[in-house]
Image (cartoon, rainbow, N blue to C red; front, side, top):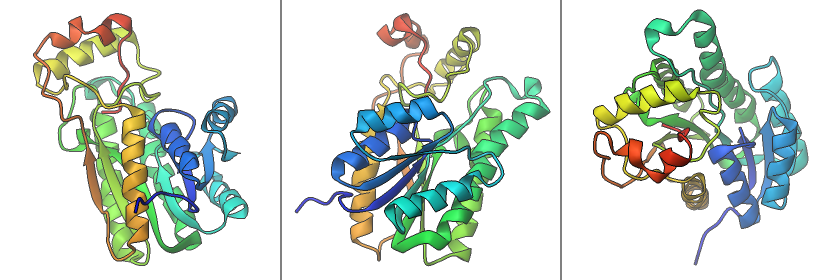
Length: 269
């Protein structure tokens, strides 16, 4: 018998683009009660229309009280939460020597403070056996040129999640390290020159896959995995790693790919 998120109460934060948007759509398609939360009202309304259902909650995880409001509105709409997913993320693309204090404040506010504020708001409003999941990155264990601040923020996020497990054992916490995925909104603010330089560095260090994952593929995998875990509350799903099984691309192969000729990919590394 197949297992899905049908009937589950699901909150996805960062649901206006990329993996978060695809995951919300997958949950709606399964028949879950879904709240899509993000700060961009127009993109969020598009995501709800595209998914064919769900409730939009416009809020910024980085604003004081933003996460508490997301959770309060979500539970008022769909009840105690079975699954909460934090997929919001931010990153400057520049070497650490050029990463200034404002860059650090921005990336830590979104990737660490916002995530922990969401967890803090959600843990008291979970259904029995519920799961709180955050999206991390393979850059924590495989640093990439230009993403030092991003990788450091995700390492801090992972460390905080381990502490949440100790302090709130009645909730299951899942850390999902995501590899290169295209297309996402992750690098929407990256400049073409910076991306060109970054892909050159990543390619020379063997850090580019020949093929990227898609947001839809990642989302379907997560929706199915969490659905099975919710059906088995005695099983923890503490750490997941999702990355393309394709071989590493040759050093300069990325420069000749169809994707690169069309536009430089902005990946979720």
